[in-house]
Image (cartoon, rainbow, N blue to C red):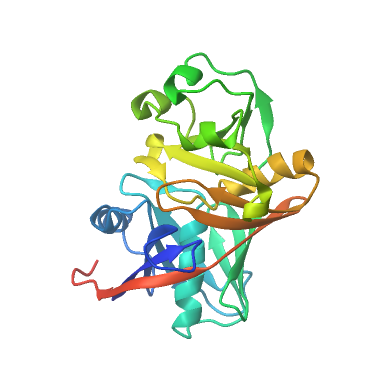
Length: 271
């Protein structure tokens, strides 16, 4: 079995968010999938297998962190679509059956891929006691997200505050199902992005995620009314950084980015 590592939401190697991708004939036992994800030891490893023709989806797709399975992942979906298209296993639009429903990925001539994901509904909540201390900054507002993401979107005062956060990850793990998305408007939109974010997910074994596609299904509806546009670009300001172009379409959010395969290898241990 061929296993690949793909850098997603970037057009160059060693940036964006790396994901493991393994194409299978069928899903084996969950324990084996979790063992592979733990061995790969990236924020996500995606497993996919083809479905019979004529159905509502073309491939089944699951995602595992080194610690657990998750219900939605953007960058590993982008990485999987990139592998399918670059290996000739798929063309045009690919439909995935996942825990969070049917997702699609459409490849473009420039090599970028647009993901069609459900928009995460947002509910404003009171600032939980302890969050400012755990995060290291006082939020302007806090919004809860949908069950498949399970994050808190935490609006901060400015881009510099987001970039300089040094959270207490152990303390943050107590405040949401998956983690915290810290965000602020871009200081200078002429640089090519409209808002910044960082994603902290200690609840699923990831202190800081380099670029989180699924988080942008919440960031798009958060920032679009505030910035007056349904077409925005987010910069995830991790050490690796990455850009996610968002297009808000009501109950669906389109996420566009590029990907680069950096490693191809053979998995020697079969299920």
